[in-house]
Image (tube, rainbow, N blue to C red; front, side, top):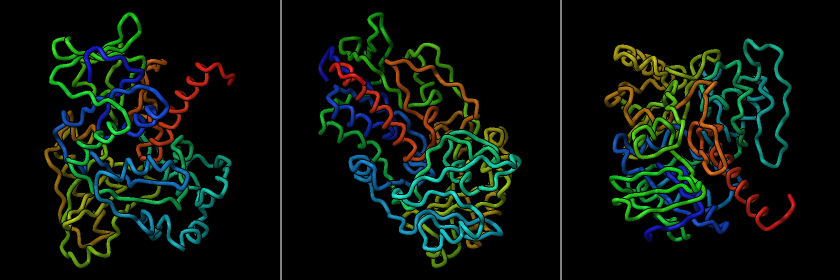
Length: 408
């Protein structure tokens, strides 16, 4: 980056959240500078950064988006899609031949199976105590950025994706994440080197100015896109001035354990990505919903969304872990151990996949400041983020049309 460089857009990103957005804005003709702060978050592993959700690719998604998520690391295609095993009901696989049969048998009509089909419109259920269409609500709450009672899950704005989508489980590496932004240079995005000292603020001319190296080198831009949550930005509170930007404390975190299995032969019968639900009428937090992801070399990742109250005392953490293991053995008896490294509030490990209170207040956006982080996404899964970023891209397209004098 040259000294005193002017840009249209400056993007602060982490864990590859905003790389495709940066490339798309550059393709529209905007000059873009990209600051990747991933290297400053040293705690956790690539599996923690990757999160508990499979990558979802629909037929109408842009090819460049799919490539941006599959070019860096190895991945496995889930031919039958994710699976969810529900206690006392059975197994539901998103892409299995019998999935429509189960939807009908369980009285769960209203799921969207194929993009070629019109998304079903559903009247709100009359019984608000517990929705009759629990499977549709479960698939929304599973990916939600907020913790909600199951009776309210149908009303979430989490985008629905067709169950016939293509599903991928990535096997991430630290190198893959740290190199995620490197390909942006090939499409003309400037990569701003991460410095031990930098400062960014909006100056009187309304430009966002990024300074480092004793103010000798700086970049300024008309628009600033923030890809970090306020929790993640808190460590840079003395360096990034966003005005009134109070830290939003999550109500819970998706938390990863590593598991072991007594029989590697029997592990072969466990799906590569599976969910286990114990009680339909309870929320999906703590030990009720458990996610299992198989990794290479017999590694097993076990995920659950744990409320912050659980982490207030070590005894609660241990009790919850024991309950998770107990519930998991109801489905997969061969599991016999779980390990969680250094659980404590305030660590990087519990900021990667946050869920918030449903009344989460957010920083009021303005045209020069755009948020693209977990606090504003409609869902934590990649499809929800894709929909959100498409809306950001459309707003920049609209600006181009206005600049050209085209009536909208």
